[in-house]
Image 1 (cartoon, helix red, strand yellow):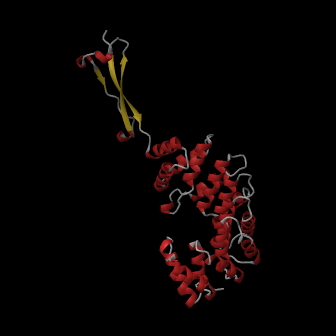
Image 2 (image 1 turned 90 degrees about the horizontal axis):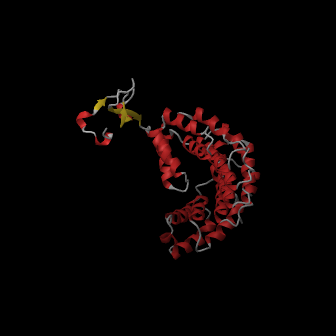
Image 3 (image 1 turned 45 degrees about the vertical axis):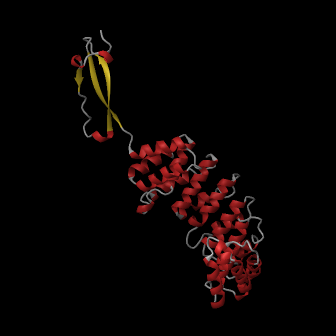
Length: 324
């Protein structure tokens, strides 16, 4: 007997396999394979195989990359965000229940901003899943993704879960808590959220301090002496970004104690544009000599946000944009 691959086409019996009722012919591929009948003759069978959905295809590719430092991973996650339909939600919610930490992390990254273009239609379904993955028994990478997701969901009901991670041993987890707290603090901000941010402004990790100081000083519209003291304590922070956020926060509150620090920094030829922006918004005439010196040095021609220098000079002549 000839091997099927060598049989002449004339002696091959074709067998047409029908699609299952309700199946989509565009969602299937047809695979051919040889089978022998009880009578000994060969027949060619056509068998349908489901094609993975668009959602599953994106998920599979993201899991194959599984590297949050790879832009391709986030391109796939953002595409899932944009799909934002029930199937995408269900697929990613199922990922959050998997035993694999990589799968749970991907599920959280998608749920964080799922359907953001259409008003986050799955917020109520997503929130308890994300909160449920904030338990201390989760791997640190999953906790980072969960804390980030709570920040993106912008819901005060996520606050308790974030507070539970505020003193976590892993600095990446604390950093993400500092990043997300202001979005979950509520309006007016919950005092426990403020206390946690104040504590995090003195964290041993500079990224944690930076984001906590930013959240406290710039993101939350609240002012009292405890907040000002926490910001003052960061003026001489060894991390320049953290110190800059402290200056910004104090200037926004028109605290006169920051004038000397701003003047000192404006006197440096490598002053950052954040300080020049702060000078513009405070509009204090005491800054004018320093600003004019920078103008003479051509600072505005070399800094990517050099237009703030002219704004600062004008503001210091005309008066502040921020008022007590």
